[in-house]
Image 1 (cartoon, rainbow, N blue to C red):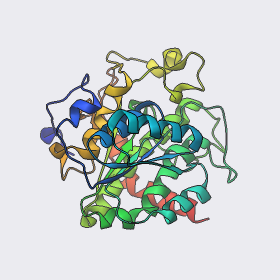
Image 2 (cartoon, rainbow, N blue to C red):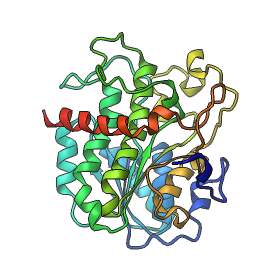
Image 3 (cartoon, rainbow, N blue to C red):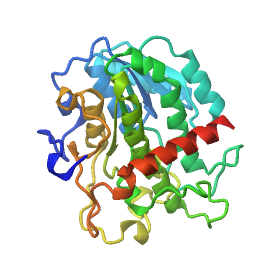
Length: 316
């Protein structure tokens, strides 16, 4: 990514997912949306299904996902809305999901996430936000690599956050075993990791025709993402809003717009290794403005180091 060659589109902060894919034919494409049973995941799935794609909702709670799938079919008329069990915090669940997939995969939207949790850990002792938001999606994408390559033009979408500007990956202590645990630092680390994954996957998978991009969906109040915060996103601590002069609040349809742009729009065909917000490629972050991409999240050395760390952790 270079500052003088930013990708632009006719869409913006108030565009909706359905507007972005209006007239786009995704018939014959197969998509997976993690966390697709609610929030911007549901809206992402709806736009993809309305455009003709087969959509699999990958969710931990399959009962709620089955209900969401029926609602999506009713809303779009597309009967090819499926449900599969996936717990991103469980290596076994992710491995079983990937092993069960058959045939090519054209679109993978790594959408699910958690935010600002109390100090929680997986059975391995991994900090839960890093394990869920990054390691789970890393294992999923790499486990589905062959299916993505078979699609000959697949797209992987990594849903990050403007929160990534608040912190880098703690490479020497990613699970806060030595640093005092801070829920927002852990969240920022996981969202930086989402961008770094896209940077390195884009480099590694270019020869396979797989495009990988990251995005900031914007601030969407009232979603399950904020369930660990009393009052939701509106009650984020002052430190989370520090020096903010430009905060974009959106509804779920607007929040899903950048995801579906990267997942299915011909306007960004061939674009890879980039970070978008408001349906545009983001410029560099400037202090005092809560927008843009932090330099640390695009650093290729950090991206390669995170890939090695993630591979090592998952191999244990």
